[in-house]
Image (tube, rainbow, N blue to C red; front, side, top):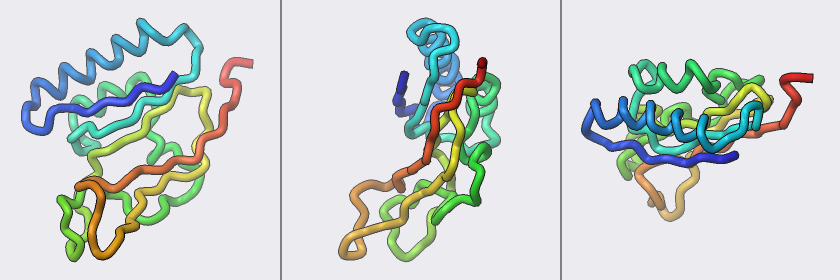
Length: 132
């Protein structure tokens, strides 16, 4: 099961409650033991309370990657071409059934322009049976 989200960009309470709600929905929709991927714009730094809550149930692919990250770790650049991205606020989380080969924040642009104020996150995943 793949879940995608976009958390509020201003309200801390809204983001904390969004983390609880998305985890509740995952538990409700995904069958027990079913592989899960959760990705999106969480608008939160890694040390935030809501991200810590998600990491109690799912793995951060950046932290679980078997190889060093490729390109940018930060994902938010605010359309600024000349300033490097400063914050990692976009994530891909996975359940234990996934092996993470590589994590990358892709920095490609076209004509010194970006299609979004966020960099795309690319992860290489391989399904493994966590409960043989």
